Each structure stands twice: as structure tokens, then as C-alpha cells.
Length: 554
Ligand code: F6P
Image (cartoon, rainbow, N blue to C red; front, top):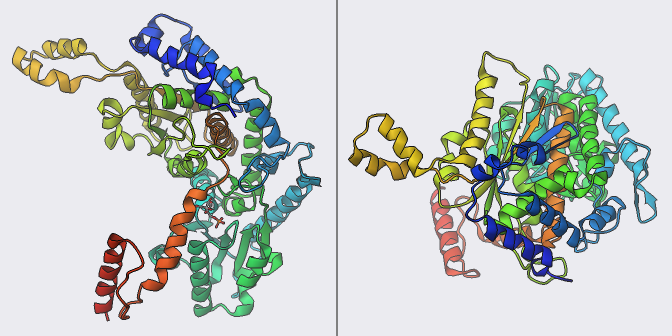
């Protein structure tokens, strides 16, 4: 396999970067009145302006050629065709099949999975209707108005992010909680707010073996049995979302109370599957379906549009440009919509668990930098926290700014102010402020020369900090679906270009295994434990210290 960094396309891009070193984005804008139109595009209700990246037509052409050289189109075909492109787990990657309401059939090997998907969606629809209408009663005869989703990673971040994002669509009187952390305080604090007689526990786990989720699920079950529920009532109050029917059964949840999905749905790509049940219960199945349809519209675009006009591909390519040729180590996700407050956390898993890899798909070390650090906060909160570093720090960081033109909750002039900040930040990052501009400004304020000399260097903004702006009319189930799907495909494209398998996650295993071996060495409070010796000196020392503190707490 030719390493991507050894290709002629990579060399062209390296030369482009060198040639642009002395050119500012300001100059590129000044020299091309058509830049905004040239470097923007629209698909599935999203508008992407990528003109505030330091790119030229040549750069985009070379990036597109790089995508071609990486075999992106063939990999895209193979993914949609249900081939086992997740080679290290020998699995197909077909989350797109979960949201395809057309008559297209998807196959894994010879099995038509479209029918399985429809069957499960019907089951979710029916169950949602019974819960929301109150037809499904709990042990006391009351209907269930509270949902506690117990899951972690992809079985938490996706549904949680979407439920928060669709707050204006919440069904009146329904409450949804998400418990993920194995820290008992997460579950404890949640249980303190709910009535067992009116609660449905949704145990969400692809494998149904994840330590955090199983521990929380067992404790929730015990709490339920200690608070009025009987063994026979568990069936009315607990459902499972999983691919692992036998583990669900051993946990004590009946097959009828299990919503199934399949190994060709990756955990971090699973919110469209049964894992989305808590979304459907919060906003209704119709809105869940709209979310899926919005994602499907983006899938169709991604599948069919030429690379140069393809929104997720362009998001990926600008990312590759900034990461590999401009030197960005981090990428900020900056949603200017409070309801998207969980989006950065969701994308941290989606992106970093997918592309945070150092082994190429053929097992060789990768020949270039792969996934960047993903972080973010909703605007304008981030502005008052870490934007200082974005504007003037020594790290070079790219960003995605995301905003709806119309707010779901109009209040005074809040949205105008929010949007003004959104636009101002992208402009400030791109244009910066030169030393001459700063000096002129200070002089106009009447400052003396000495003060100008002292202050001016601190007020310079280097500019040339790249950003994409993603606009939508409103944050609706459809536009949210399209937005998430765009990011999923962006991540896929980058993985193909970097030559990694975006669909495995071996990097989470070592810590999990060590935690299991350390657990028996930790005493319960008050317990005497032998000195730890099986680990490095730091880990042994910490373990002994923790045990000593806990021993004294009799
Ligand atoms: O963090 C590792 C991981 O396997 C994720 O990929 C997954 O989303 C999460 O754990 C939860 O796994 P499960 O749904 O099987 O409980």
C-alpha cells in the first residue's frame, strides 16, 4: 500500500502550503471577490462556508486529488455495499442503512438487513406510543413519565446530545435522565429525583458487558426492588437495547423487552438504532423518524455528489489541510446554539475514538498525523474561556462554528447578539489585527508613545486562524440529523485518507483490562489489604495510600 504522504498529491499540497506561507487569508479575500461563493456549498439543509480556510482553488483541487488517490470513492462504495471494511473486527459498517426509508435494500453477506431495521423501528414506534399515551402501566398502575437511560460512550453520548438538542420538541410532562459514569454519585443523584413507580430504566449497551453500564444497571435494579417494585415488575420497568440477547437474558430482562441492533452498527454510530429509544420516548417517534430522514438526506448527498461538491468530503479535506499541511493539532467544535451543548462531547468520541490511531489499516505505523484533539463549548461561553488561546496562543487550532439563523426560542434580541458574536469570531480569527493597526488605534485613543510601545505587542492578533461556518435555518430534527451524518461521513473520509480503520477502538482496552486487575486489590472501606506490589511504583504507591485512607474510615 502506498503511504499517502509519499504520493504526488501529498507533495503538491506540501508545495501549496509553502507557497502560501507568506500570503494571508485577508489577501486571498481581497484578491478574489468570488471567494465566498467559490468556497461554500449547501446540502440537506446545511450551508457550509469554508472560505475562511487558507486555501486556493489549486489547494482544493489537490486535496480532491488526494482523496481520489486514497481510494475514498471506492471505500465509500464498499461501505454502502455492506462490505466488511472494519477489518480488525471483521464487520460491515452500515449505520446509513438504519435511516434509509427508501426501498433500497442493504445486505450484509446474503442477509437483507433492511427488513430487520424496519421491524425494529416498528417495535420502537409501538413501544413509544404505549409509553407516551400512558397505556403501558407500571407496578402501581401509574403510567411511566420518566426515562433513565443507563449507558456509556456511544450508548449515552449520542442519545443524550440529541435529546438536549431537541428540547423544543420534548413531549410535555416527560422527563429524561442519562446515567453513564460508574461513579455511584451519578446514579445516586439521579435516583434521588425520580419515582420508581413512574420510571422506565433503559439499559443501553451494545455488548451488554460494559463494566460501568452493568454496574449502574444492577444498582438501579436493586434500588427499584427496594423501593416498591417486585421481581415480576422488573419487566414493566426495565428494557434493554443491545446486540447481545444472551447477556440481556442473563441480566434478567425478557427477550420481549429487548430492542435489538446488530454488529454492523458501531457503538459511536448507534443513535439511529434501538440506542435511540430514549430520543423517541422524549420527542416522539415522528420526530425520531425526522431525525433519521435528515441524516438520510445527507447520506444521499454524500453517496452521490462529486467530491468537489460534497459537503462532508469538503469538511474532511479542509480538516486534512489544516491538520497535515498547516499544523493544527486541535479542532474546536463551537455551536452557537445552547441546545447543542453536548455536541462537542459527542464529537469527541465520534472523531477521536474513530481516528485517534497510530497504526494504519495494514498494521504499519501511519506516515502522517491522524485525528486532531477535539474540544469545544457552546458559543458564547467558550469566548469567555478558551478563545484567548485560539486568537493569540502559540498553538494553531482550526474550528467549526455552527449556528441556526432562526432560534427555536425567540427572546428579545438574544439571537441577534448570539449571531453577531458567531460572525465576529470567525472574522476576528481570520483577519486578526496587525501591529500597525494596533498602534494606529492606540494613537487615536490619545495614548503616549511609551504606552503604545508597551501595549501594542499584547494587542496584536496574528489572524489566519481557519474556521468553517455551518449554518442552518433552524435546529430541527431534520437539520440535526443532517449535521450529525455530515460529521460521521467527514470522519470516515479522513480515516480513509489517513489510512486508518475508523471503526475499531482497541485503544480503550488496555485501561479496561488494568482496571479489572486492580479492582480486587482495592479494599472496601475499613478492610485490611496486603501491600500492593503487582504494578509500577507509582500505581502501587497510590493504591496503598487509597487503601490506607479507606481502612481508617471504619
Ligand atoms: O469506549 C469503548 C466503547 O466500546 C465505545 O466504543 C462504546 O460506545 C462504549 O464503549 C459502550 O459500549 P457498549 O454500548 O457495548 O456498552
